[in-house]
Amino acid sequence: MSSKLFGFSIENSEPLSQSAVSPVPPNNEDSVDHYATSGFFGSYVDLEGVFRSEFDLIKRYREMSLHPEVDSAIEDIVNEAIVSDTNDSPVEIELSNLNASDGIKTKIRKEFKHILDLLDFDKKSHEIYRNWYIDGRIYYHKIIDLKNPQEGIKELRYIDAMKMRYIRQQKKKPGETQNLNNQLRGLKDPMEYDFPEIEEFFIYNPKAGNSAGTTSATQSGGSQGIKMAKDAITYCTSGLVDRNKGITLSYLHKAIKALNQLRMIEDSLVIYRLSRAPERRIFYIDVGNLPKVKAEQYLRDVMNRYRNKLVYDANTGEVRDDKKYLSMLEDFWLPRREGGRGTEISTLPGGQNLGEITDIEYFKKKLYRALNVPPSRMDGEGGFNLGRSSEILRDELKFTKFVGRLRKRFSNMFNDMLKTQLILKNIVTPEDWEKMSEHIQYDFLYDNHFSELKDAELMNERLSLLQSAEPYVGKYYSQDYVRRKILRQTDMEIIEQDKLIDKEIKAGIIPDPAAINPATGVSFANEDPAVGQNISAPVEPEIDGSATEAPELPKGGEI
Image (cartoon, rainbow, N blue to C red; front, side, top):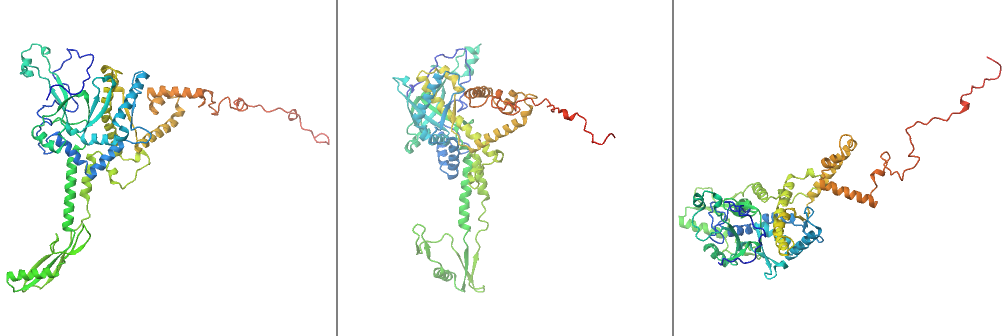
């Protein structure tokens, strides 16, 4: 192989300080230590007989995905993570937390839309996510015009995971033969030692995924291939790593044993039922005092005379008489000597309790749990519960969090592509990207009814609690305390909601709370003047002069 790397590299304009050194090589999330480049696929000692190389591992994952139960679980996970809508894109970029100008944000959104168009993500999102989930890794070659790199990415070409290999090795300098311990032993100051650098690149072998190239790649070590620069390849993994072997795993890895157990149990059940289900007959034939040879001939004649010679052909549906076809479950024909009970026919009962599949259900649930899918989803017997969130199983909550983690991990693919595009187009520098990348989020389209029900239930509970605490606001609790502790509003949400409320008051959409009479709940402008009078002062009754005059005495003189 040539030492020159194919592709391009993005270098920082500000190199690291020479004093910022470490004897520990840069760690990588996809491996504990750097790979030894003994071959294309590396060489590992397989103690459990599971896999010998990455090639065997990916091949096993793809074979697992063809199993009906595993395929159903994968489809459930992919459908939950990638939601296809006729109007909305499956994923959008979220820049609300990014501290940048509106012009930069507009350019970032434009370039992200360009990347989605290159991937044809609106149509192929399901296949892309499924391939990444099954293989545990995904590769894309970022093709650019080397003469005009400022034009950005021209094409994103998918690469089969079997044909790529990620290599991390230590750069050896000319004449370097001693190890680190020997070199540090002769130095007074360890900082004087020139610590090694780690070289990272990819090896592409186009014959590795073919049946013809598989044998040569695995037997000869597969050292043939094209070295490609790290920045020219988008490399996104599942994040699961076998720390002992330093190899990336898929989320299907822990389901290998459960799937094999389920397969064996199902096969053994089929064999048992085929062999034990039918009833068989025992024919005791009286042969008298015939010699052994003649007795066997007589028994054979009786078998041919009474045996059912009709054969059913399952392929054509025909029933024909053919002695060449023998049943797998033959009846028993036994001779009986003189002195016995004569010719007798008895029946052996078929297998009992053939309908019990408790062990099958156990290993099925074990497989679903290994795939992080709630068993209630896979049964298909119960309908979806649209009740309170408290009535929904905890497995659904765990499954929602699992899908969220998968989305976060899958977003690294967009992050790498967007980084390359923005740097090539001189929108941002590599140093700026390191600061901005932490604040760039990717919003996936949600179709999870459980999440919607949970949010609605939480909001309903908060509003009920707010209504109960309303009489104590201003007496024991402040408005700020209520908004933070009961409504759970953040500082940004409080500022945003206050601005929106002021805007809607000025626009006349909602009334001004200061202009509303708290006693009546009606605006002062629309209130009846008679209603607004002071009713706290008592009203004195009108004084009538006739009420104070002495009553008229009856006529007839004095009493």
